[in-house]
Amino acid sequence: NTYKIKEEYLQEEKTGKEMFRFEIIDDNNLKFISLYDGESIKIVSDSQIGNFILENYEVNKENLLSIATFISLYNDVMNGLSEDFLVRIEEEDIRTIYKLIVKKTENQVNNTKLSFLKSVSMLELIVNEESNLPMELVIYDNSNNMYIDVIYEKFDINPKFEEKLFAN
Image (cartoon, rainbow, N blue to C red; front, side, top):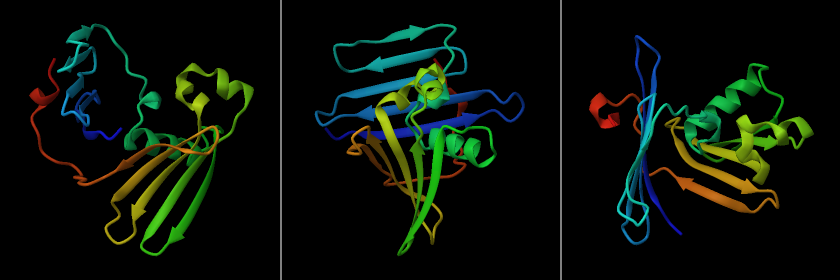
């Protein structure tokens, strides 16, 4: 299946409160929107799932398969805060490939904070060296087969948008 995803992230300067918005459109043009305002998550869908709100919901960012998650995990490893990954960096033509290879330790597998890693062997972020913008995020399953391939068609850094975009 192919999905178009528009991912938006906002962190309030004063409070540090984080908000996420994921808009997903599938092959059949069915739309699914997930809004997190720092306290609750709202799901809006064109499909049979309908709409619902989860109150007092805390998002575990490490389980969001997004570029923000990759960067957070990579920074944790580079700053000595995590031993769950090996880091490899490869340069090819005009791109740099940052690889996070999952260490399958008993502690890591049982760590609910990183529960999605039970089925993942590696994450790759491919960055254009000239623009320094991400081109692709690839996630591999435990058999080292491509599991998820996110191709970035457009990537804006620090865009200006209204907080109401994230309102539940």
